[in-house]
Image (cartoon, rainbow, N blue to C red; front, side):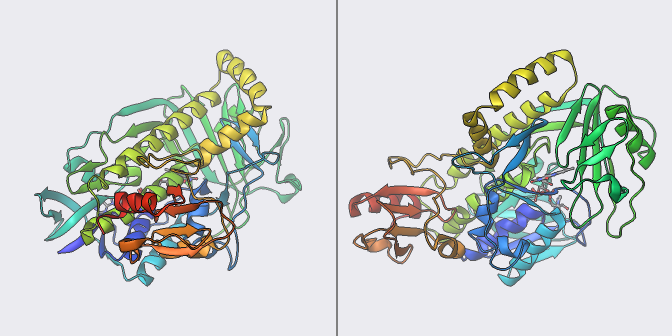
Length: 484
Ligand SMILES: Cc1cc2nc3c(=O)[nH]c(=O)nc-3n(C[C@H](O)[C@H](O)[C@H](O)COP(=O)(O)OP(=O)(O)OC[C@H]3O[C@@H](n4cnc5c(N)ncnc54)[C@H](O)[C@@H]3O)c2cc1C
C-alpha cells in the first residue's frame, strides 16, 4: 500500500511530497494535467516561508548558491507603503519570483528525493475505512493509500469528495485586469517609478488607490513589466483585451498610461477577474483525508500571502503524516494540523479582507485611511503588521511546555539553517548535558553554547519545549514524537 497519495502537483503538493520523503515516507503525487502549465499566478514569496525554505536548503536554489535571506526594508499594506527599515525586529522577507520557477524547483527537489509524480491522473473518487483510503482515478485503476491529501487547489475535488464544506464569502462587485506591457524606458526613473503624463510618477510595486480604483505598476527585473487595475461596480465588458486593460488604467488614474502591448518572449499574461472569494474549509481533515493549501483556504491575492501559508501548511503536515505512517504518531498529533493551521488561515482571511476594504473608493474609506495612515507612523503598528503579514506572530499551543520561545518559530542560532535541512527533530542544548534517553534515535542533539536554555525543535522549526531538565525534555519528546 502507498503511504500517502497527494492529489495535485502544485507548489503545495510538491512541498508536502518533499517533506514526506525527507521524513522517510513514500508519497505518490497524482496530477490531473499531463504537463506543467505556464499560467501566471504568484509573483513571489512573502513572509516566513522564505526562512523556512532556507532551512531546507531551498532558498539558494531560487536565488544563488550561498544566498541568505534578509528582511525587506519596505512592503505594502492595503495600498499604503509599509516602511520597515527602522523596525527593531523586522520579520518580513520578500522574494520576487514567478510561481512557475518555484514549482519547477520543488519538482526537481521532489524528483531528487525519489518522489513519483504521475501526470494525467485526475482524482475523481474516494472511499475510506479505518485502515486505508481507496482513490478513484479517471480512466485508470484505483490506488490504495494509508492517507490522501487534497492539494488540488481552490476547486478541490478531494474536499468535495470528502464532504467538507467551504464556507465564506464571495464578492462580485469588482473587476480587475492584469497584463504584461511594454514601456518607453525613458519613462522609468532610477527608483523604478513610471512617469504618467498628466498624473505624475507611479511608484513601483505599490497599490495606488484613487477615488476611481486601484492601479499597480510592477517592473520586474527579468521580465516585461506588468500593470494591474481594480475597479468597483463595473459590469463585464466583452472580451478581455489589451485595450480594456489600458482603458481601465486610464479610468483609474484619470490620465493615459503610456503602455503598449508586451514585446518580450515567454508566457504573456492578460487576465480579467471578477470579484473574489474568501473561504476556509470547515475541517482540514476527514478521517484519512487531509486538505492542504488552496484546497483548504482561498482569499484575495493582495499582498501575496497564499504561498506563505500553503507551503507552511505542507511543512506542518509532512512530519506528522510521516510519523503516522511509521506508527510513531502520538494520540492527537494528526489533529494538531488543523488546530495549528486553521487559525493561520483565519488571520490571513482577516488581513486580506481588511486590506481589500482599505483599497476601495469612497469618502468613508478615505476617512478610514486617514486614521490608518496616522497609526502607521507608529513603529509598533508597522511591527505588528510585519509580524502579521510574515506569520512571525504565530504561536502554536505546545501543551504544558512553557517559556517565551515555546510555540514560536525557532530563532536563528549558529548553524541552524544547515541542521534543519534533514527535517528531523532537533535538540539544541547549550551544555551538552541533556540526555534524550530512549528517544535518542529520533532526535538529533547538537550543543549550542550560545543558547541560555535548551530548545527542542519540531521538524517544522517550531519550538516544542524550552528548559533545562531531562524530565521536561522527555515529556515533550513523548508528547510530540511518540512513545519511545
Ligand atoms: C492572480 C493570482 C496571483 C497570486 N499571487 C500570489 C503571490 O504573489 N504570492 C503568493 O504567495 N500567492 C499568490 N497567489 C496564490 C497562489 O498562486 C496559490 O496560493 C497557489 O497556487 C496554491 O497552490 P496549491 O498547490 O495549493 O494549488 P494549485 O497551485 O492550484 O495546484 C493544484 C494542482 O492540483 C491539480 N488538480 C486539480 N484537481 C485535481 C484532481 N482532481 N486530481 C489531481 N490533480 C488535480 C491542478 O491541476 C494543479 O496542478 C496568487 C494567485 C492568483 C490567482
